[in-house]
Image (tube, rainbow, N blue to C red; front, top):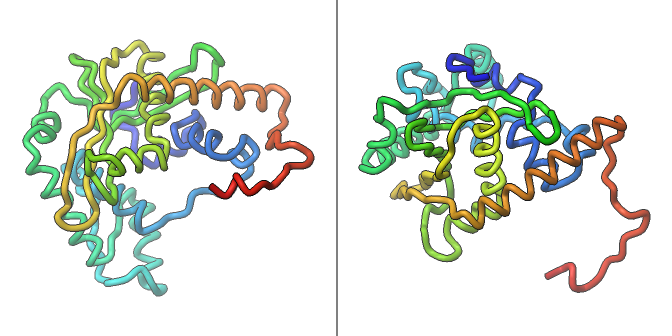
Length: 260
């Protein structure tokens, strides 16, 4: 099922499993996924969402500059809640300025701009389908998809966009972006859509707001695919028996080696 006009809010409210669910199970357990706290709003999350909106859906005018300089006080909270109910992203003045700088920097990248302006590109289209192995409902909302070439792309705001060792690759392992890349690819293929390459476009959150386009290697996609298969199988088993355990041992041993 392909939903072209589904709002971001409606997409996240849909019951199908998304990449955040998968990464939560991989990072913790099905118990934490099922019973853990809901994700809270944060300045980092809002900035990332705003950059995505400004680049991928500028015609919707989703970014709102607040009259407030900080995220403190009842006035801010009331305005923030109202913006959220309107499916808008409210940013304090400083964050709004940074957001615009990041968007401007990204649009200066010729390769990314070419992809972004491709008339065949799907932007923020919601795809909901079933996993053929587990029959679980799964979903994804790719930032950019080019159906003719089978190219998938996700925009990432990051502390470093460096292609050098210890740069963006470290962020990818830290936040398990490879599982996300594999999951998005899996959802599209399960819906019968071709995927022939997955890319990240990284944008730094501080000056000079440097940008870099990355192609995810096949070895990392294979690693991500194994991870998502494990996570989906764990969720299926938990649902079948209606038991969401940590599966931790009764007694675990602490050793010096665990510190390193």
